[in-house]
Image (cartoon, rainbow, N blue to C red; front, side, top):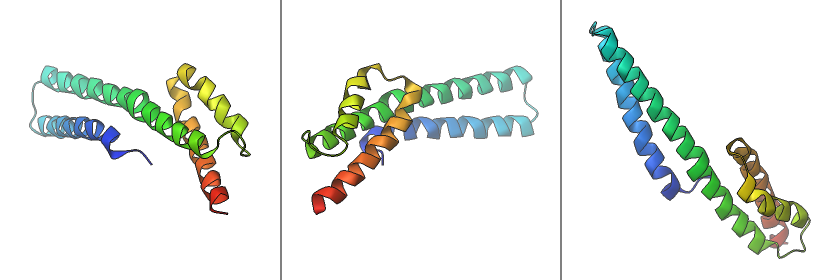
Length: 120
């Protein structure tokens, strides 16, 4: 569903966070200094927050934009979802991060309907 070229950086970031979490586990098992453990928690948390923002703002927003262009090209104004496509296109610049996933699902559903319709 998401283009691989958009998820590569995110995957790398998550791998780093995974290593940090594994390091925290070893620190806990090794009875390390609580300040060091706390600092590693903070670093992992910040990394996860940045990765989440990257997912929403970069990956999801760009994926929606790419799919929106594809759907607009497949529906030159005369398909059953033309009004909804136009609405999403108009709202795209104003979409909040928490609205991206529902719009991606909606545009993917429209794309599937268009593919089925255009095969007829």
